[in-house]
Length: 112
Image (cartoon, rainbow, N blue to C red; front, top):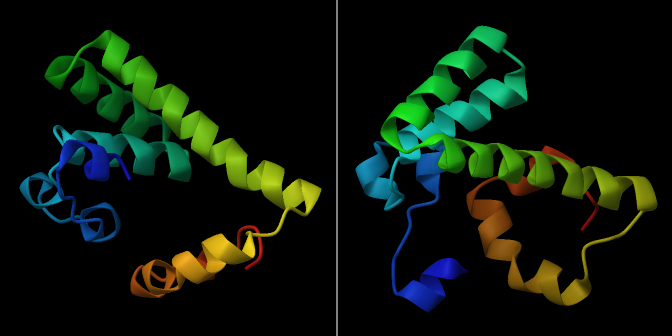
């Protein structure tokens, strides 16, 4: 949605298929994606390496912001699942194609 405000276009498949960061339109996309993947799979060595790469390519504050964003987005679906919050019908209708294109329904988060 931020692309709507900035006029930038993003290739979201870069997040799921390891596409080169230049296709995603996100600065430092490869390093950010490596950090997310390392955190998700809980690989301590990979997390340390990805964190160092982010600090080197961006800076410490940016790495901390990335870590906080990962933590928040890790928590949101868990909160929704734990409380039984369903995806609102308008959002379900609006995101049908997006969820199909990226196979997001397979992630088994808050029900649609």
